[in-house]
Picture 1 (cartoon, rainbow, N blue to C red):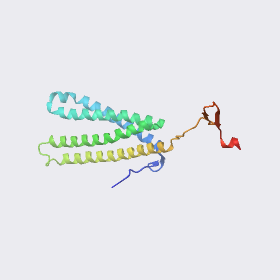
Picture 2 (cartoon, rainbow, N blue to C red; picture 1 turned 30 degrees about the vertical axis):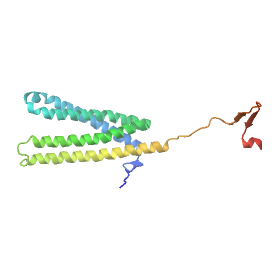
Picture 3 (spheres, rainbow, N blue to C red; picture 1 turned 120 degrees about the vertical axis):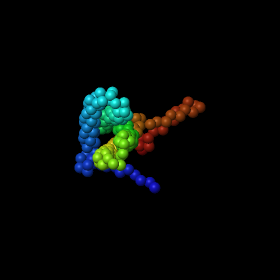
Picture 4 (cartoon, rainbow, N blue to C red; picture 1 turned 90 degrees about the vertical axis):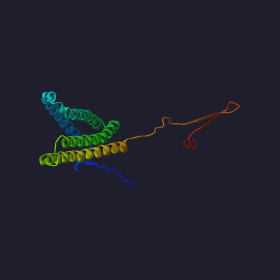
Length: 198
């Protein structure tokens, strides 16, 4: 069965597509920077706890992987902003491909966090607070993925719009094309336009 990804002409059904895309990109960049800085400060404050307890190393590895993902998100958000400002389809397509991979990586890392949270508790079925936290975390990840998917559809729509609006033309720079043929008698036959003969 063939299905097509929807294409939008407006962002949030009211703003122009490119300007709305830029607003989303700047918002995503600011939130990624805030999350990166707060996670970095948080991990630095728990470095003594990690040195004392060797069991926390798995948690630190997960946090470092998350920090790496957020750092790549900051870099590619800058690519999105530059591509949207300059109407550069290659940069927008690069962000689109990254966004698809980023969605899969975020989903996989969220699943790893949930598995780690369940595995770190002795009796996970007796911990009601644990399941409450997992539901909140999973809901936040689902909401984030919905917004991320909408942003990717907007990027795809902008790429399609820029491709459709490109002014590709073939220009013939010769004003009066002529055909020259030389025979055995060195006589030149010149073909000119029909308008000149009339």
